[in-house]
Image (cartoon, rainbow, N blue to C red; front, side):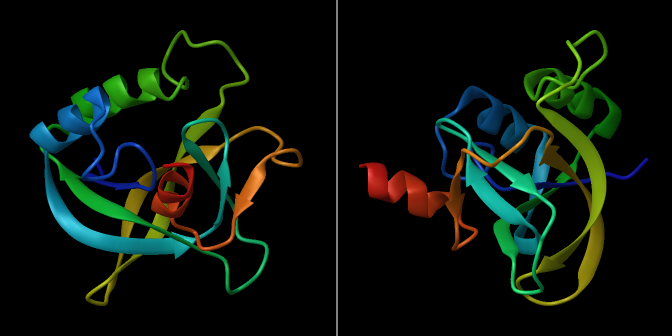
Length: 136
């Protein structure tokens, strides 16, 4: 099973969130990374959708999960796409190509936002921290 996860919102390092701490405690941080996509502010958290232009990039963190099946089941429930969650789910877990800041590409799981973004605020920088900083 694939053991890497790309996160781009409240699960990133530096966020004081219970699920971010659980991820940090059960995974190794591999570094900053990016992937093609467009970032939107859903509420106090972001949603990533597929890129619509070559310049669309989302910035985040890459982790290697210690026990992927166990942790992904917990994260799937948190993201609303686990077994038994109401459908359609707000997110879906997919495999994407992720580029490490130091170079090189790897495949990693990522949670893709599954609902319409027409009324959501686009985050042009692709960095969720930019929204958090502007709301302080």
